[in-house]
Image (cartoon, rainbow, N blue to C red; front, side, top):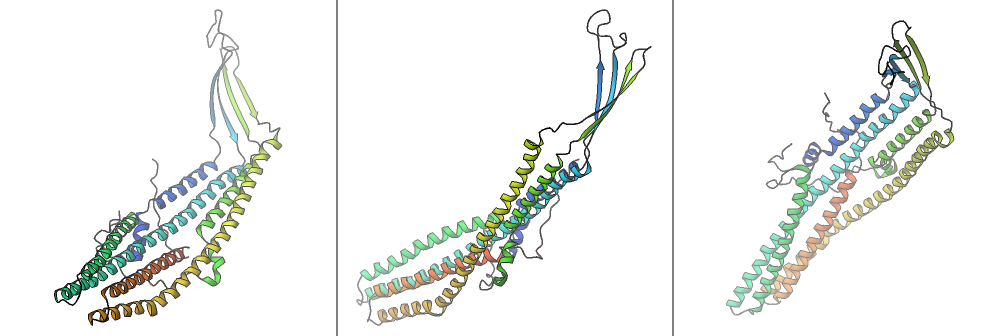
Length: 410
């Protein structure tokens, strides 16, 4: 299995590791090969049948169970072959070829899901680390207020209650740190499921989540290329191939046979030639019903594909709208909300240190600043998840699809 390097893990490296470690991709390769093997088999004539028999063997009287005494007893050897028309064999093989195509398309869908899930897990670890670092810094700064309150109390310039108030703030932040650490551990577990052990690995800088490769001007065309929809196209092709194969079954296969019978000495040997044909006397309620069922299945998949296309387009547009809105909000947090919250905290602390304000006011300002920074980080985390979903929604045309060799039977 590929191992995670000791170097910082970038998002692209995480995606590559996830693809290399995936057994789901191997499963689709195996499914495709299985269908290809069956396609070869379906294109062949049925195996010939070797027939050995004894006819007219006496079971009583003086010649009972003798193979040679009664002139009617014959020892027979024959061979029969069912001849399936080439068009029918081709139609049967085509069903499995379409199933092999579906397996390859399903592999692309699987790869898309692997890339999306890995990216989401990578961003989750990245931002949980950011959250933990933010809370740790805020706790360190809040600890300074504890020292200031203790110094003021010793200098008889501040009440003892300020000490407990400052310590409570530090304890509240510590509780948040415990929660953040648990979420980070869970996020690492999820990412490890895709890329391997990352306990001692740091993450590389996050990619730019303000730009997406999804072309919004050609959204409909791109969404119709989504592997989910492509799989339904492949299912429709399978159903149509099965309908054609069922239609070919309306032409009955003929079975020819020849048999050589040896009799006792003094009597001539005999040759028998025969042909058997199924009597399809009720095609309207048998073969025709199978064809109709397969065509109905194709109609079903076609309708499901159209419905899925509409849902994907609406869903993708919702993601795009939320992503763009979040980018505007993040810009506002960066330019106004966080600087104002920081200025409020600094002003409250300055008033407290200058004896013009109360510690509770300064601590409330710090809590508000922490809440503002956490909310900004939460929005950024949500935006990154939307970006990953959009960025890896569809495989690029030049994407390298991992290949594997399925074990051959010997």
